[in-house]
Length: 273
Image (cartoon, rainbow, N blue to C red; front, side, top):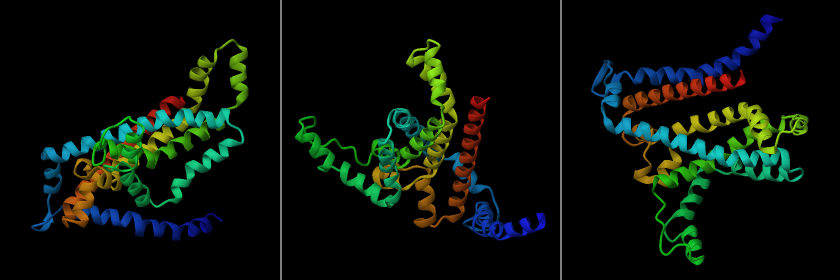
């Protein structure tokens, strides 16, 4: 029986190796090759760590991901709490509204923001008609536009993970806390928040880690000002054809992703204990 189970897993393991693991090894080999000729070299990694430009972009990428994660958490937690503990029949409608963007092509969503935020676009006209703004706000092709686009892309993941954690929270615990004389605020911070930490940690990981490698929103909404590590990798592979250096940058980003996942996972374990 055990041998049969092992045999049944072989096709899946083969597909995983051929289409996921093997390409990583090939790209890893490319990262140690020089554009000038064959042979082992560290010049691609040296180039990255000795150029202030790439280190600055790495820091910008991390900061952007942190901002998107924090803002998404601030917006998502109250919404998830209201959905789980306050709404009844309406929470299904809200959930559908959150899921609908997942059925829309990523480029369609990003170009919608492009049209909305461009000069004399929908946002500018709306602000001008309300008398709040006189002229153009000039938000497109800035870091702010990139953050807005990324929040729109990843914020639903944060809501769903926190909602699932809060939905499993037994309401009798809240009633017990109230009967023991705790105020609603005390119950929230001493009961609700600690028990929802696993969902919060999962949401942070699901939002922060993909943000590190994203390039579509920064490219379209940020222009030159939106350049991040993801756009550098895209340029190396599809514009400059510097595959060796692009592979090195990709593996540096992969290392950053793995370190981030390990750190967030460690944080989650600390709160679980």
